[in-house]
Image (cartoon, rainbow, N blue to C red):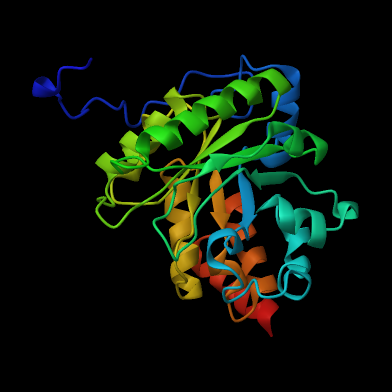
Length: 290
């Protein structure tokens, strides 16, 4: 057991020193099997090493919340502009045409809703993910929650075992409870725990000191968009995260709740993949929204 009486906060993150050069474009994936790399290459562009993921799995805990009332009307027009789709198996099977041929990051745990305490989840059967030919499986880690932390870490550990067996990458999603600090120390701990337990991708939140979170995580980090922001602020969030080392974004509400969702996802793509500044991205948004 770790000696908690001498738990020292990390200080030497090697900021400004590039990671050792790898032969594969996805961080931490050099030694993975071919199938894993193939799936990761669907999610992360081999040209930029980055991704724009479109998250619309909100209904599995929130029901038909704003922007995802009708997947066919609100989400399908956005799909062509996303690199990867993050959704639940029910929505995938009922509402996403397989002819779209987009990589899927499947929400792979469930168990509670916003009407109860969140994150008391179980892992879905890996065979469902295999049958649906998904490119990754996503599940929540509730780090710092005394009730659900151990269970969610166990879910991730089991998913990582199965993912390794069948060549399916695992994305650990860091939950933020009401009693958890939204700072680099917490997100750094949560992200590292995800990676240490076998996650190939981590989804977490942007914060001050985010460059330390990225530097200490040996797998790519994509940021969550979180609550709806004004379009310029959302583009600034994307830009700052990419500049601090994020490998992409996994946005939902900041896209599908935008006044012009199709324009917004294209502007996000421009910031993430093409190096647009927030101002340039916002100009692109306004031009496309006309």
